[in-house]
Image (tube, rainbow, N blue to C red; front, top):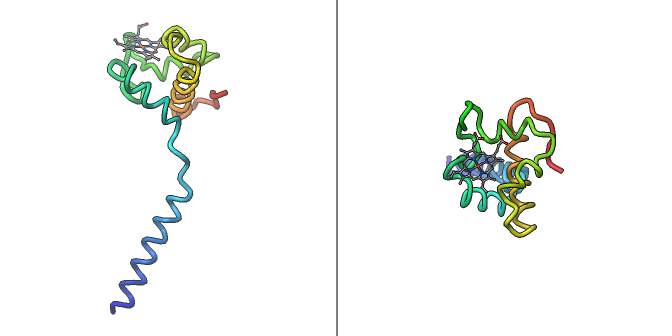
Length: 105
Ligand code: HEC
């Protein structure tokens, strides 16, 4: 009986390990931190809070041809590296919206 239990435990741990190995790296960590710090109090951490007009920031951005240009006015005072991080984080949110194409560049 203990033998069976330990092989079950191995199977479970093995499956968990395989899953962890397949998981993508955390998306745009610096960008997420910056966004949460500076933007989330109005837009939520995933930019999903509804804005006037009924759509969220991420939904509005999904309709823009140039994500970076759309964000520029709000992030232009930040260092270049941080701007890129935010654009990349917000891009990853836009990509997760159903029906949007690949908009990160
Ligand atoms: C004090 C609250 C507040 C904070 C903080 C804030 N926003 Fe906003 N933001 C708003 C509101 C409200 C609107 C919608 C205004 C409107 O109806 O056009 C908006 C609109 C926008 C838009 C325009 C969307 C469009 O339709 O063109 C962008 C882009 C944007 N925010 C990005 C950001 C980013 C990036 C940050 C962080 C660096 C940020 N915002 C922080 C309140 C905020």
